[in-house]
Amino acid sequence: MVSRNPHFAKLPAGYLFPEIARRRRALLEKQPAAKIISLGIGNTTEPLTPAITKGLVEAAARLGAAAGYSGYGDEQGLAALREQIAKVLYRDRISADEITISDGAKCDIGRLQILFGGKATVAVQDPAYPVYVDGSIIAGADSRLQYMPCLPKNNFFPDLSRLPRADLIYFCSPNNPTGAVADKAQLAELVEFARKNKSIIIFDAAYSEYITDGDLPRSIYEIDGADEAAIEVNSFSKSIGFTGVRLGWCVVPRKIKFADGTLVWQDWTRVITTLFNGASNIAQHGGLAALTPAGRRETKTLIAYYQENARLIREGLQALGIQLYGGVNSPYIWAHFPAQKSWDVFEKILNEAQVVTTPGAGFGPAGESFIRFSAFGHRADIQEAMQRLQNVLKN
Ligand code: MLT
Image (cartoon, helix red, strand yellow):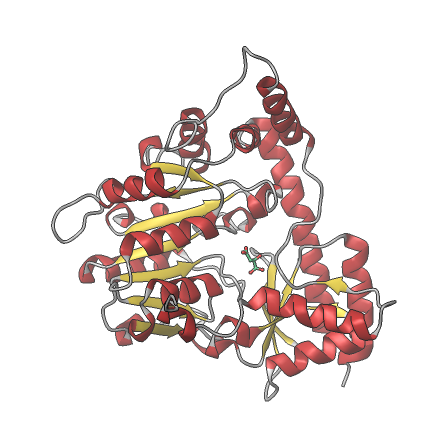
């Protein structure tokens, strides 16, 4: 018989979101008429906007004619899309030939874990998006994982003076799950720490479009020297609703090298070309449409919709006297329930209000006693959920 890959035995039983979905199904089995509202997984709910839909539809139609048909595309992704990402989103701080187009940030994180392998030492924010830890464990890095606690008392920014050197530092801003956004001084400290230690930061900017405060950095490359120390992953999922369409990108600056002098970019493109055949050409044209002036305007409007949801959630929870974080330049609200277990609060909210949330403990030990509320939802559902919570969570 085939031996099981031993790393799988070291993982928590199941990935966080399928476990939440299992508990939701269990409630429905008990109460089939329950009208469950999800403020759980960060899954977009609003339709694609017109210019972006047009970009997708036209690209699909072109494939239906001999003159417009194309098969495999450029290995690193459509050149025009890479150029527009560099220009519109990075203001040419990085160049198009440092970008690879993908099917999403999560998938790129998995491929980066293959690139760096199981021997790389890893530091992660605690709490953190589970893919950093679970993916690292699958790659074999379990005993070398260091958690960097990010709590209200340190303004959700790790104390780097206490952090031993790690090869890879995962950092997400705006943060999933806490909603905290690192400012320029904090990111400069992180970049300086990485450069001093010859570490590589894997910067997850998947929620960067939610930053409306002009003083906050949307990309790590707004920090001098970051192109020597940071890889950035990002995606169109949460900005233009491509959670199902699938489109993302990864920036691997040419200045980043391994200890033996090999460019990280060289091995990264080896991973991409060996294990991935590129993002859907239709999706890439949708991404291109999103970067036109009309697409950018529509993106702003869509983001404003979810931000208003976040405001309503904050207002509703604040009325209950709950201590809150995030939810301003981020679609996630991080609510504190002192002295309570987050899975217990999750169950109470699910069973009594029929609202799905995400228990903080699912994001790491420092997430205990917190609940994450997601602002992705139809407005009427958000309003209804907040009404139900007024009854269930009042003291
Ligand atoms: C989340 O809810 O944390 C995210 O939606 C999950 C993801 O983006 O994969």
